[in-house]
Length: 217
Image (cartoon, rainbow, N blue to C red; front, side):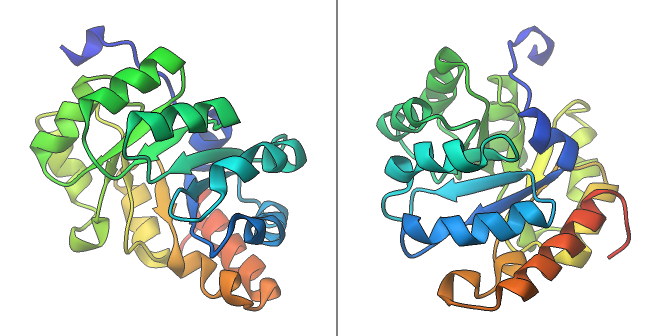
């Protein structure tokens, strides 16, 4: 019974903003100027990915600089060693693209919210019933926002965060369908980590913030 499972909620800023920006950079030092722009535009949750070299080592400095304004999570976590290192570095939440019971158990022991990924109802319910804070539907671009309603037929309480291939219009649709939050990468960040226009980045971020707040795309 899922009602008996101890479930950590998503961090407050993440839950209230309903928007997670997934940041994949060439190196961790590239995070700082982009985060500054995102936070100024109203972004309140950023998932820093372990595919970016130096992410865990750089996290404490980012928390010191930006932690009062934004929830900084660690994503692409695929084993318990990575999870523990991310927790020790101060991650506010954790994200994994896979469904692995050991990661859920380790996150629960550490007292840090975990959003595990899955695609099928079996994968998603396995994570949800094991105490996930929410489940990441990945890759969500292969599905439509109606998937939230489909899942809530048999699993009425499940909290869904779609990720992968979500643009401004589909973000609005998923949120309207009842998603807890949307996870956005390339459609918001664009070429920001390749020396792109940071003013344009701020404009895109503000557009997504407005949609997450209930505006139209």
